[in-house]
Image (cartoon, rainbow, N blue to C red; front, side):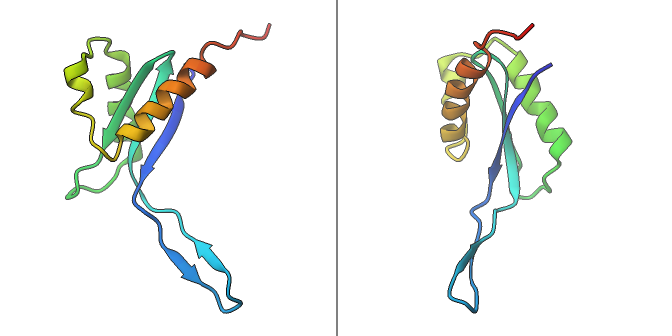
Length: 103
């Protein structure tokens, strides 16, 4: 099964080095957005009091992506930190999963 994956991360920090350059550190992952098909998107976001577990998050997101019973009301329940990545994944999945398979 092909899956597109994008992690939701805390904002990273910037570090000023001695030579005057700035080193950017990626934030720690706190969630995930996946696509399992054209427009079939799922997400998972870790609770602030829990520790992020990659496999649990991915499993929850895939389960939500496979469930086709979503409605507009449920889309409004997507957290604001995830929603921009969700919309980007919709666009990416349309392009990625509409490609013709090479034989």
